[in-house]
Length: 163
Image 1 (cartoon, rainbow, N blue to C red):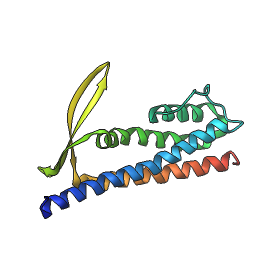
Image 2 (cartoon, rainbow, N blue to C red; image 1 turned 180 degrees about the vertical axis):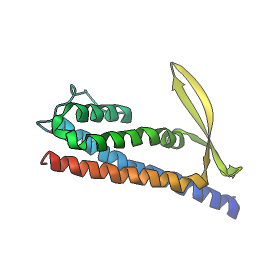
Image 3 (cartoon, helix red, strand yellow; image 1 turned 45 degrees about the vertical axis):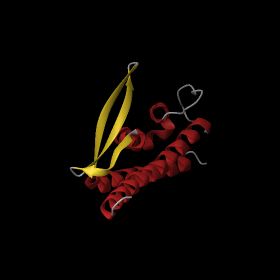
């Protein structure tokens, strides 16, 4: 049975990770909407349509190429590239937490420790990730802003494409 301190530690961790998951989902859903609008709109120059866009990195690449190729989207191009850059920057930290495995739900030296298995060039590599709960509010603010910026770009694109 957990003591009160351990229960509070677990609750703080679960709240932090859960909030990151939910807010990331909001941001990424808007990115999906942007890619669908670009795929289905006439008058948008775009690279050859991929069979599927499953991974976030594929979606980011496709959206970037569409904004680069289409003069119709020129006024939104900088906003799009800034947004895509923010996604790339925040993705690694988000992936570490979401795809890592918690080692202990009790913080050690003020941080939660996760184990992460990476697959690089055909080989698996293990590493440990530290998540300082004090960093959580700032990280969540960045992800929340990502969601707002994604929704704003989606709305601007919808207006621009007269959808």
